[in-house]
Image (tube, rainbow, N blue to C red):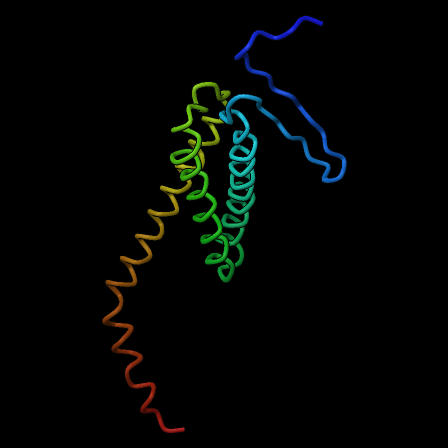
Length: 146
């Protein structure tokens, strides 16, 4: 077997049976090794966003009680996806070599975040505009005789 020239990169795909995980080991720098961890976190948050967006749609159509739960989960998953792309994937240069499907996923996460944030602002604006009438109706409640 021929010797490798000095300073060349070598990546080894190793399988550890005790933890049943695949590790990517780099011999010279750790520029590649954090990618599986980062993209794995992105996939987990993206899949949670997709699942919870279906739950949010179902809650809005059928059960208004669950809207807050799915709303918060969609917002946190979309925020986590956007933050991972902005803080981890883009600065390390991983987006240059990403497949087109990653950009579709990123677009869906950001648009979901905008949609959920717009809905949140509308709800707060409604509550703020309706607050004086709600306070006027509820201020007499503590004075009601039992």
